[in-house]
Image 1 (tube, rainbow, N blue to C red):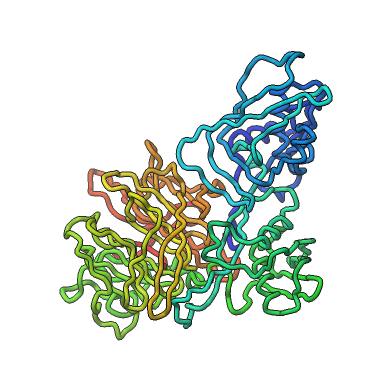
Image 2: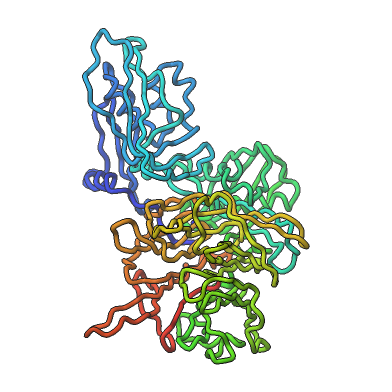
Length: 629
């Protein structure tokens, strides 16, 4: 979530980086005024940390041939001054009908095949553009990965108009290669409120609405503040809309956005009456978190004005509705299991203390051996799976909890099979526990509300079964790791959690599945690192295991590079930021460390501090290292 982190913008891909490096000495480069050439400039000053290349469009040259014109057109659509110059490559009728905002088709590269030049006798010619289809950005600016190796070709038809070749027929929207797309567009997180759960009983955090990130891709340098604000007013993406709602009525227009030296954003809108204070504040809050780090320095407050009425919001307003508000206390507390089974709460300053109650005691004959554990977001409840995967316990962290109690779930899974039984307990911020039952005869996802289990259908996961999951703190999105029976490939998916029913008869399902990071052939561990981003421990085919940041739109972040993770077994991160711009809690990891002199490998715990992995000073040999959630 960009509003509460210090992440930088994505770095340029290699081709653009090479171009920028070549221009550093002169600061800018101007090419001859002919089709197929664009003027490129480096931004001056240190505000743009990543030195993105600024592209100025060049109009078609006189007498230019179709292939040269097509190259110029593909360059012009990436320019930072809109599409006016690009339209000059089209016939008058095509320019009037062309809707570049309808879609962006992102290709790994754009190839225009060679061919014979046109002759004076030619009156029409068709030239294809081909490449591997990577993703699509729709009219709402939402990015959608395209799974598989899809090589596509699109035809551009040229005709003569006033003795010059011009494009008369072209595909819908815009075609752009991945390098140009990353240079011209950036990911922006806009925010919408969680939809109410009709089956929940309002108490504590249960009825509290929070903001959910909905990432979009917007032009980097074409009025970025106003376009980001308008994207919020226009409503959520088609994918996220079933689980969120917006405070904006249709027809809201963003007229002006500025940020003053006091870190206050001033936003003027039209098309809506702001006279009702609560409605005004709800709209302003959505704007505020979307614009939180869009300007020079972080925004601390936002003033919203309309034709009638105004209001002001800022960080720390009550009740807390900011993204990650249900993730748990700030800073996020860390937990680990000692080798004797006791659960210990710690921070970065020392080995910590055992938690209260039975889970803080060493395992004994009166306590069943435990496997995976998950601490509730509030830090008052723990889910524990028995070592054989047959039972799930929900145990309070209280001195009064002297025994494990009865299990809330039991599975008839085959004993001794590590790929069978319950796995990956995880908590949302409203107190619901989620777990996967990998029983090969009847695999399922289960939600436990109170002490009652509810089977959760997963729509669209044809032929695959869920192996593990991680629920977001807002409770409306979930990351799933799935596998086809008989296959070693484990794939990553995002899904939406839709609640219905009544408090007496709740229903819930996971729907809207979308594939994430399709190049990964194995996913070992996942954790929510931001409200719009996962930290994933996985690997691509024929490559070593690595750490990846994956956005909820499925795209892989290139702005944070983590060290190799070949020896790691699990990772843990935290969404917990509160409503302040605190530094992200360190990433935690368990790793298998090889010993010298042929000694057996050791399992050790690590923290990522200042981009370096450091062994954590913990009591005894830890079995797991985790955050709440």
